[in-house]
Length: 569
Image 1 (cartoon, one colour):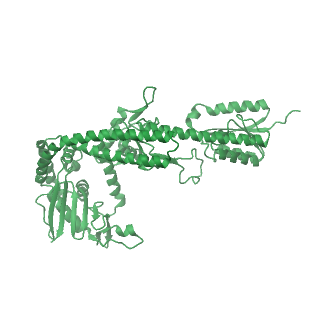
Image 2: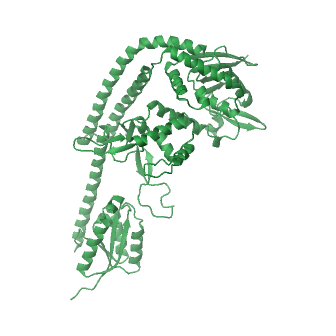
């Protein structure tokens, strides 16, 4: 007796664009169509989800298929493999049950239909074992990637702007290579931001006007792209693996449209889990660090967060509790308040600091700064003393640097041994491994910071005569312009020269970037000074000066520490 023609539907799915390019869907459709013809079934429709993850149960073609089954238009759903229906074993069984309850059955080309409950149980067990094996393979693959990253190999082929990824071979692992035509614009972006004072938005506009191609070939630059470049430590010579992990978006299910992937958001892992990998640097580490300082400072002092003209905005610190001071109007006057009351809210404030009249404090600090700008004597005297000290310390620094290098190599081997032990020794728990590695990485980080500081000190090569001549030019320019500055220009000078202003009762301590000598006397204050010189920071000034950066920064690019004490008479 001839079998009745069953109404059948085909379901196919691919989850990535690469599978789409390889025409995986077409291969599935051909196999499924051929099987339906061989079995003499009636093909109702093909339901295909292109580029949708099997981890998601909400997919457009799958939803349409379920609707048609409910309308009794389909009796059997034919799929090549169970993982095309869903990746997770539990999700597979859930969808199969849902289809069965609607009056249809699911058949897979890779599995013969069970003839009894025992056969069904056997298939379920095989499916569960297969799913568990995939999870184990995925975990082993991840451990392998982490091991390679710890050995200094680039894991993953997508390179940031300015680099290209050179694929691995049998003889050599994959690595980043500088792409000079892009690296030129990376350096330009840092220069425009740090030395020419352009905002990220202005830099994006500049590159778009120049029709500079992005990594994707587009000529429209976004502010977010500029921010990503300026904050990416890769450009300073260190790429990080295992820095982020993927998570579902917080608004999942609320967007009203289908998501193609389950984990479309990223979350930063704890810093101790990051794995540093050395890569060719496009900009100096000092340049990158300077960009981070400026980003942080610009965020704190953004005009969007300020409606009134506060000269010391973002610079004031309470000497009693250590919290920042902020400006706020009271009637027609402006005052600086300790932020303790906001920090403790809704509880009462715990700091006894009183409000400070902004106009008096701004005027006092500016008067001290402007009169101090014309006195380079203390800086030069301090440099002479420092140069003698630096000469004697050079040999000791070299010895210490060699000791640090030897110690770091030993720690690197210790970390690799720990990873191998965790991989192959079942007795070693994940908690033991993390605890052991955390100690090693903490020691490595401490030694690296010490080594970087020593290397900075060893780069001091300018002669005292060259520095003294440049300082003379610097201060001559300053004194000729100081009296005609607008409020915005004064604010820029404060940003450049002042690190912080600590207010403790009636005493004010200004900590900043130039030395003061023969200090000014305020009508109601006594002003005392204390300065400490840094040969390296002065060399940075001269370097900036010779680069010809913007007028104010070029003239006022001093970077010497100073302290000014303002005390009530």
